Amino acid sequence: MTGTSQKAERVTLPYLSGLRGVAIVLVMAMNSSWVVGRDVLSGGFLGIDIFFVVSGFLITALLASEYRSERSVDYVGYFQRRALRILPPLALLIAGHFIYAWIAGLSMDTETSTAIAVGGFFTNYWQAAGRDVAEGMSHLWAVAVEQHFLLLWPVVYVLMRRTFIRRRSTELLILAIVAAVIAWRFYLFDASAIGVPEGYFRTDTRIDSLLIGSLLGMHYRRIRLPDILAKFALLVGAAGVVVGIVLLDPASEWAHKGGFTAVAAATGLVLIGLLQTPSIGRSVLSWRPLVALGELSFGLYLFHLPVFVAVQRHVGDSVPSVLRLALALAVTAGITALSWRLLELPILRLKSRTRTSGQHATAHIAV
Image 1 (cartoon, rainbow, N blue to C red):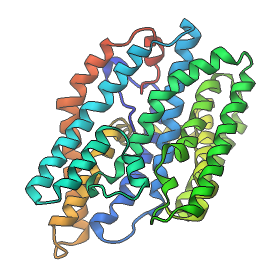
Image 2: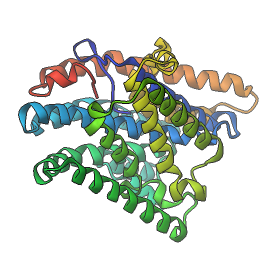
Image 3: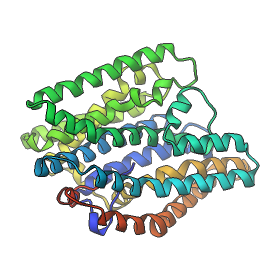
Image 4: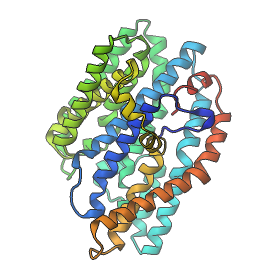
């Protein structure tokens, strides 16, 4: 969600942006149920796991490249770049939604507590505890999960590299954490008393997807598969993601008892196939509209749900659902474009000036 680029920091692997484009389409398709009044694609929530895998991969690939070159990580530069990318559009969303809630006469107590939770990046645990959140910001639990990872992972990564001389020890540790997350989520699913089990929201139950992406980001340069095996991995991975989308929903037992991790692993296979060899999948995901959606995916993710909820709240059923959806998509696109042009691009130019030792890596894959 947080990965996008500008002229000075361009993603030169367009199919990765295209994969994020697929992820945001899935999420928006699922949430379009707010507008049309019925389920459209309940499995679209797995777009979030795709985001997590890609984000884990990109962040770790950058960290690994910087560490190989400098034997260290520039923490100050790293955190500056993350803050400049994430905080301005998020602050715009919080301020805009607060004004909307005041004008619409919604509960300002709920709005205030939600704004504090979102700004403090603990809205995921707020929701896991069954607390009320403003409907238009209920999707920001995923932003909190990703930010927890982005804040902690550079330190953990460097500690692992300096502690474990053998790479296999690092791999085994990450796989052990993934297994522990699955077991913990398994337990919480049976113990949860809220509608959507609390394991859906919490960082400690959703970090497995980010770690799977990170494992690939650490070692993808050393993976060398014959073209036929790389294409087979891409095909199997894509099939696994599609099966998950068709069969799973956010509250299903299968999703919580291995489904999230299985889809993340399938996304990892897709990434391996894409990175290894040219393929039809690469060409499809490099389609310019998908790449554009991927580059704007963070803004689209932030702004789509409050717009969808507002349209559902203020546009009556007398208006056909197709027109309601068209209105919601148009408003979302307009807000996202304005945020990108007037806020995010100028700040991204500032972000490019903060690059230090990681510049050589950022030229190839930007986050």
